[in-house]
Length: 101
Image (cartoon, rainbow, N blue to C red; front, side):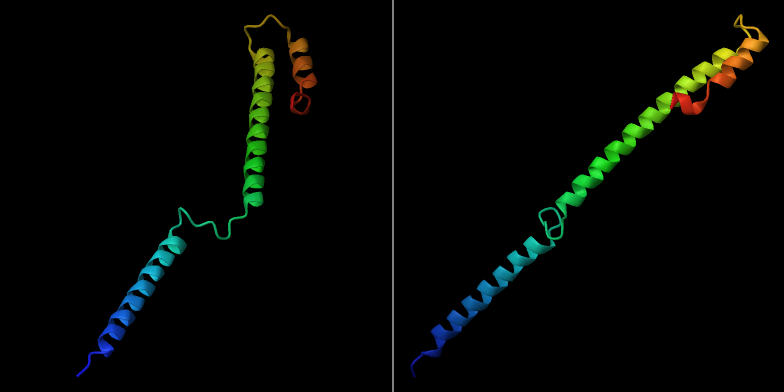
């Protein structure tokens, strides 16, 4: 006779649709790895970057030190130099890798 239950169904359907939309938006926010910042420890990330830069600096210094050592030893071992045998061994023994590094 009267259609009183019809608007209730429309309201209920609209409420269900609204909840579905909200749930989809929530999933998009939570499961999007590009925008999600949950669980990120910025301090730890900064420390990792700092440690990596320090390691690269140490590697560069070590590489330069070995280059210096190689130049010193190649000068003393190269037969085209005018150093005699005694001065060559003296140069090699006085130059150690610990003094260069």
